[in-house]
View (spheres, rainbow, N blue to C red):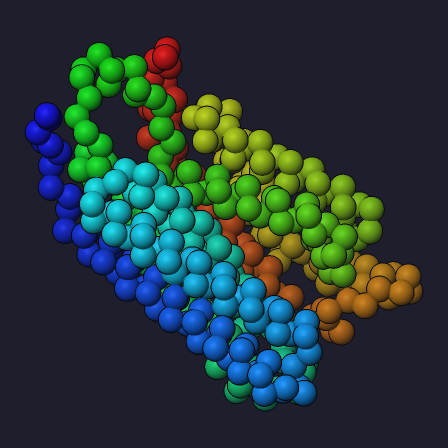
Length: 329
């Protein structure tokens, strides 16, 4: 019988585990309420809900309850210092950071666009402002969780001590956490962009002040997202070409947005592209591209600068990890 000599986990990990259990319990309760609502609507023969609507409501309800139960089990396992639970929490938190980052960008973009539907501007600002606040809360909590559960002190609390020889065999190259999250961000964005390549062709893409649409836009998106996937794989495998490719992509993105914002040809090119698309039967989302254009491009420039800063600040640590000799199994 072996004595457990693992160090006591940091207090932040215990707090995060308890919060995970409480949050999962809340998700379970919400799912149960959705299930009760779907059953009440079915038994009451609610004419406003079609069978398709009720099916979707049941899917949402059961999905929430399943995630709630799994979250509670995972939280209890975290308190029991099960390493598989720590890995699941780290992966789920990383996904939370990636998805909430996209949600923050979308909410900021929609807050700055002119209002065109039947809802009042005040209601629109409240809606997207609330969406931004919730996304910011999820981003902060997910970033805290992924940081707390990937610290060396935390990992030591979940992993039983290994003999020195086995430790040397099991150790390997590790991508710094900020770049690992950035790689996940690249992969998610590339997969979504490629899957929705034809669905998202109602708005041209800008390339150094020139609007791309149709086949040229599709070729541009495929090329840039392929490079993003390659950079993500290179960073996760801790290859120096991966960080250099990511750096090149962000420099390209910053230069592209900066030229598009400053160039006097950008708006005329965008108007001409939208007119050509309208002549082909497309329905662009913006009636007047001049409203909100500078805001959106400025937001894209700010976002590209933030990602560039992450790459530059994490580059020394990444190169140090990449220079370490690869240990054979």
